[in-house]
Every structure is written in C-alpha cells, then in structure tokens.
Picture: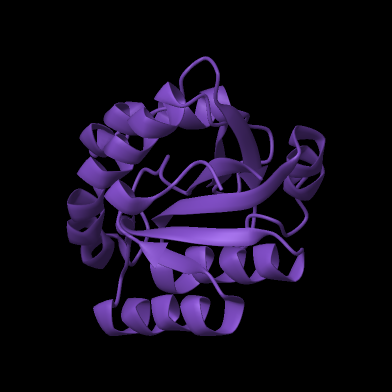
Length: 179
C-alpha cells in the first residue's frame, strides 16, 4: 500500500493567541519532523504539506512560505520547508480534508496510508486523522513529530486516534514506508 507523509500546519508565523504555549512543543518536535522528511524523501515517498491559509484568500503556498520565513520564527520553518518535489494544499479549517482537494489528490497518487506530523496534536492532527479514517485510509501518527498546546489533551488525542481510528502511533524511527 502506497503511503504519503502529510505535514500539517508547520508553515506558520506563530502570531496567534496560543503561540507561546505551542512554541516549546514545536521546538521539541522539529528534529523528528526533519528526520521524517529526510527519510521520506530518500525513500521517494510523497510529501504533502497541508497548511492553513491564515485567512489570506489571495495567497498561494509560495507567498505563505515567504511570509513566515521573513517572520520572527523562521528558524522553525526553514529546516522543514517544502522542496521542489513536495506538494502543497491550502486549507482553511482544522481538518486537512475539509473543503480541500486532498482526498482527490491522494486517490490520484494511489495512496492508502497517510503518515501525519505537524501541529496541533489535539486539534488539526486529531481531526485530520479522523477524517482520514472515515475515508478508509490507514493512519500513522509520528508521536515525536507532532506538537501540542496542551500536553494532557495531546496524550488523550493520541490514545483516541489509536483506539478509535486504529491509527499506528509510533516515533519517527519506527515509521515504516512499506507495508
């Protein structure tokens, strides 16, 4: 079964009300996200960034990337920025699937399993895992490559994904790209 790595909301300026609570978890997750992306790219696994558009309806991924790379937290974006092979889907709500072409794109690529990383564990990652599950996709969440605002809610979200969605929850080093 083909898989894809989905990077959720990591192209971020961190200028929102929860940013100060989120930033420490992002800094902790960043090395694992870098490692996951390196492994995926070396294995020729598609990497798809699905990112909030921050209400900028005239923007495209290049403008979003440029904006955040010139901001005060560029060091959190630069190591994981999309490369020339990466795909990019803009979203407006929590789930990577809600009103986006992602399901169609995954179908076109023949993807049956998604490997999720990014932020926020107890929000966008959780809702995206649920939406992937109801679309009959297998879900893996790299638990050391996701960032949270509230640690207790993130732990509960990961347990819910594992129990209720049959998601595989594991560190990046145990993520398998082949079935």
